[in-house]
Image 1: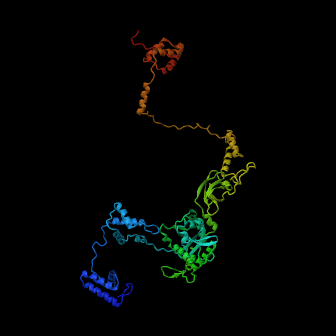
Image 2: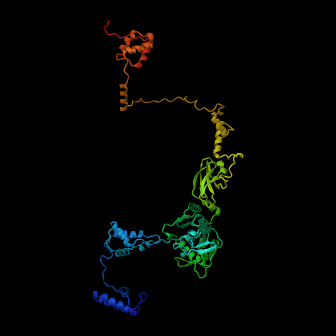
Length: 611
C-alpha cells in the first residue's frame, strides 16, 4: 500500500483499497469503523487518512446522512456577529490580533448579549461562517489596474534607509545597536539617510535617489521630483507624468508641493489609510532597491551621500536596461512574456503628447509657494513671518509706491526654497494686479533698526509719492486751485478757508442759498383721525380733572381793573357776573381786558319785564 497520500497509488494498493471498500459496504454499520481502524493501523496511518483515500480513490460513500441541523447552533446569530466584530476591531494596523475570543465573549455577556456555548464552539462557528479574523482580514479583493502609456502614472515613496554617514564613513543601523532598548543611539544620528523611489506604472522603470535629512520635508521632495522628472545622464526615462499616487505624508500634502503639481497639470492622489496595496508597485521597488542594490554596499562601502547617489544611478541604469549578468530584471506580467523596462518605457513614442518636458528650475520654484494671505501696507512696507525665516520680516514696497495706497490690503504668498522671498500681488483699478517678488530687509544696525533708514540730523529725504498721496494731491488742487499741495490744503482747512472759492469767477460754490425756491406740489390729504386709544381718553379726563378752579367775580374784577385801568366801570362788573356765572378762568382775563380796552359795549342783560 502506498505510504504517502501525495503520491499516486500503485495498482496493488488500489486493489487493497477497493477490497476494503467492498468489505465495508457488505458489513453492518457498527462494524465498519473497526475495520477501517485495523486497516489504518497496518499502514501506520490515521483512520481519517484512510477514509479520505476511500472517498478520493475508491469512490466510497459511507451512507451516513448529514444531520438535519448541520451548520446551525443555539448561539444567536446577532451574538456571533457581535463577537466577530469585537475581534475585528481589536486588530492593529500591523495585523496583530489583540482580543481573544474568550474576552469578546465576556464583554458580550456583560452587556446582555446571549452567550450560551463554549469558546471552542464559538471558534468553530466563526471559522465555519468565515467570520474569524483571518478570513475577514483577507476578504478584500483588489481591482486590476493598468496605465495606457508610459508617464501616465508615477508612484513615489520615501523610506528611511538603514545606512547613515558620520565622520566620513558609512554606517549601518543594526538591530543590536538601534532597536533593542537603545533608542538613544538612534537619536544620535541627526542626519539620517532617506531613500526616495519612483516607479512608472506602465513600464515599471525604477528611479532612486538618497538624501541626508532629519526627516521628510518638502524641500527634499521638491528636489527629488526635479531630479526624477528631469533629464539625467545615463537614464532613459524622464518627463512629467499625468498622475501621481503616494501616501499621506506631510511633505506630500504640503501646500507648496500641491501647488507645484497643480501648476504642472499633474493630478495627485493619496491612497486611503490602510490601503498601501494601492501603490504596491513602488513598495516592491523599494524592496528591489534594498535587496539588489543596498545589499552590495556592505561589500563595497561608499563614504558620502554623493558617492551613494552615483552608485544608485548606475544600478538603476543597468536594472532598467536588464544589463546585470546572472540577474533577470525583466518584468513578467499577466501575458507571461518577459519584458525589459526601458523597452517598455520607449513605447512612449507611440502616444503623442505623453512625453512632457519638465519646465526650468526657476519656473518650478515659482510654483513652490505657500498659502496665500493678506497683509496691510503700512508706510510702504508689509510685515510677514516667512516659514523659511522663522520670524517676522519686513518687506519694502517703495519701488512700487505709485501703485500703493497706505493701509490697503495686498495678497502675499511665501515663495518656498527661495531664502525668504515673498510674492506680493498689488490690486490696481482698471488694470490687472501687479505681481512682484520682494526680498526681506536683511541689513540692520546694532540696535535692530533698518540700516537703510534715514539718520536723524543728516538731511531729510522724502518717501516716494504713493498712489494714495497722488489722489490726495489731485483733490487738494480741485478744492483750492492749481499749484496747491496737500500740506498747503491742510493749512487752508485749519484757517477755515472757503474751499472751491476760485470757481464761478471767484464767487465760489452755491451750496444752500438756492434752497426753498422751488414750488411745492399740491397734495390732497385725508382728514386726520383722532387717536382713539383708551390711554388717550384717560389722559383727557385726567387733564380736565386737574384744571385750576375759576376766579370769583370780585377777584376777577380786581385783576381786570389792574389790566384796563380807568376803563373799568360798574357796568363791566355786572356784565362779567352775568356772562361768567361760574367764575372766570385765569387764562381768560387777558382776552376780556383786550375787549374792554377796545371799547366794546358790555351791557348786562335785563330780565324780561324788569323795570
